[in-house]
Length: 352
Length: 168
Image (cartoon, rainbow over all chains, first blue to last red; front, side):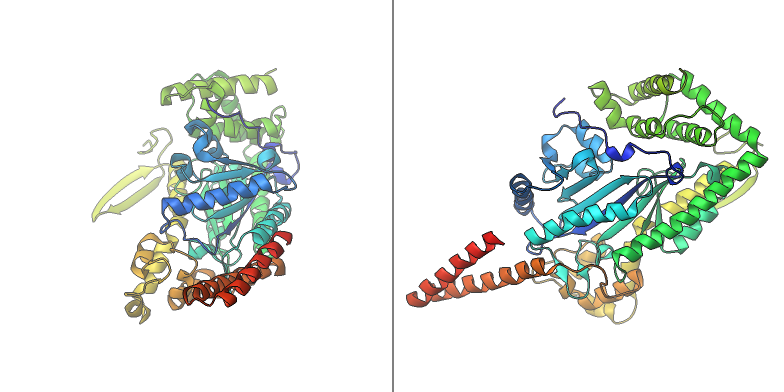
């Protein structure tokens, strides 16, 4: 397989704090475009190539702090491109059609910049746990360098311009990844998420738009990007997230008090299946890992480090499985390898 | 009765669905009912932009004037924008200004950026870029009209510009 195996993302190294129990990670994304170039739908291959070249030059000739490493997606094989997509660093579409897409990543892959996706430039900062302000700060630092180096497209009224008018103004998409197993179990989830939608925020499943929703991981983000300051957008999201956390905690307390047996049964079954399964689907794995995560946090079972579970959430995905196996795997083989990986990992951390 | 969808849990929800005019009924469990509900709820954001564009174009006089609109910079038409939901280039924002304004009002409930603006350094760079472009145009005109003395002066100024640019 081509390319070095990338280091594991630093944002998975979670500390067990109260907020991290429910918020897995936070993301800040800034969409920017070059004033002198056409957007994706109208630009041709030569133009996209020029843009990619400009950024390749920029990253090889500029000393950034922290340092960033630039690569053309086309130089990676399909498994590694899939790995970056599963980490949320590039879009699945560019993993499939990588020709003119570039990716620059900083240490631990917390800060990244994507060239030639829907927008010419997307700066992204991923942090572990509830960390919106820190994410905004680090994305801004890179944004300032980009703005003083390139001629970035802005408009006197609409602010930063983007390919889609729903992203103009700040170009900011702030999002939090939440684990809400208790709300799902107590059936309060629909009501809570409906309230979130009413407050002008968007909700997506674990794998972004269009994901079939069976798991207990949700991504909540702002929709409005124009007419509010970056701070207002982030504070609004943080406020709503705080309320969701409260509701999830309330549901956990209620479950513990009123339906402890149900909870213990769910967690126990999850341990049983994961410890002994030989074929494991992705959706099932996500649900069972979430149950173990919940059991560990509620101290129903021996504590499992959050890191181990978060790492597994990524490692069980198709491209990560293939990266670990160092070969391409068919669907049936993935079920087998996923089961084996989870059995081994959990026996190290849990069934010692 | 077992749930019609998962065949595992006891069905407790009676679901009536109308698909293409045909009504179907199902007995499903609470878990499957919740999953269905979530699935419907969370598939919405992707559709928002197309629905918005459709509603804007169907309302009022904007629909009539928008039909023949075209961006002179990239050739994008408003009709195509409506189909793909993406603009062609930064200049499209001026070409379709009036129509975009009503889209902004509906989607963002605002029509003016209040967040961070480009720093003055970036702003200067933009102005310098435009000034340089103007100088190059003047140089081209001077050469084609054989005003060589003028052309030499302009060439020197352009060279100076390049040096100052490197220093910034």
